[in-house]
Length: 476
Image 1 (cartoon, rainbow, N blue to C red):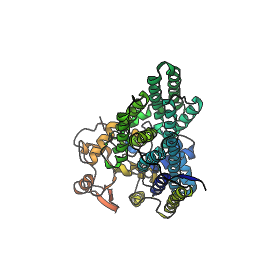
Image 2: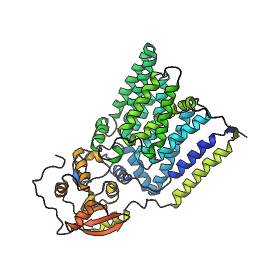
Image 3: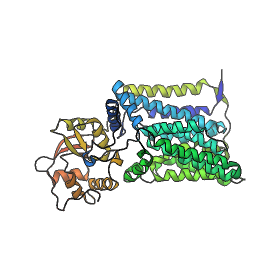
Image 4: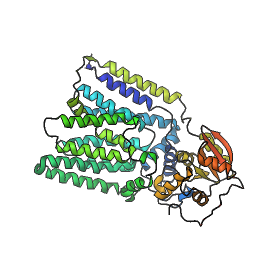
């Protein structure tokens, strides 16, 4: 009977836990509008370039950066319903896990280092392997990490396959720009170490990076895709996942361990740390600090160096070999529980106020909704008779508007001006929010229904917000 190192049980247990945790109900606030967009593209054969859903940004230029992911979501829901998205989530999770393990094992690290590097990298990814296009991007990031690992060690990428996968990535999700950026970082590290011997390789990789940007400009979305990541970052600067990373948050403990291990490995080396390793470490860490959502790809990009670092810092004993069937059965148990949860649990998480969104459709309409940011995608995706003030497509709104609007919901800044400019006729907000209390107590709005901490409010004939100053565009 084939045997494997005993540390493989850690790998199997990690996979089982992660695949099970990914089997829960749909809970991402944006998946709903992704499905609606995918269905629209399938029905019309056209990728929209102007906003038509949100009354707060009608006519604004729209650049769908994940149109191919959206089409996938729309097709699956049309064919097999929303539960199929949970199955897709499990498949993506399994793909990331298998590719990540392959990446780490190729480093030649010891079996204990492989096991712990795999666990430290994969477990935190459960927060990001959700029903959203970003999850597809993580597959590409693992591929990119393998390519850059080769470049940092003096190898070269195959240009045509690299550009082909970059083009595909650019159609799947806006994180495609990591490809050319980190290819250049890896090539720069190689050049710093090998100098003249690496000049031709650096030139080749620099041209490949430029080519990756060029192919992104010829996707069906058009050249706007090239600059769209900067627009999204600018517009979403007030959204929690786009805020600078707070490293001491408890959910980032595995990432802090990764940084500590790598730092110790650099300090304890008897020889000078290669430029390729130092430049890569600094670039990836710097990228991870820009926004909390960047931590997931950063952990993947550091997975291979982490395995090397663990071997240098911690001397874990080699374990006895065990029958290969033991970790295989453990992984299969995780898959079994995941499939069971996918089939038996509710499709949509109880935290999503779906009943209120359905109730919204029964009100005389169409309706302009003053909504909490976290339910904007649900309303946009599931209630075409309503038009939201904001949703997860933050690049459809001006950066100033996003900031003003989120402040207004907390009764900060020019909140009365925001209300008077938007003139919503209903609202879907947290029951205990300051805005909910003000609308009911001061503007005579009526609570129509309540569900799971959210309230649906109707303005009524006397609830119109008067304006005490001349109207000017929001965010001006």
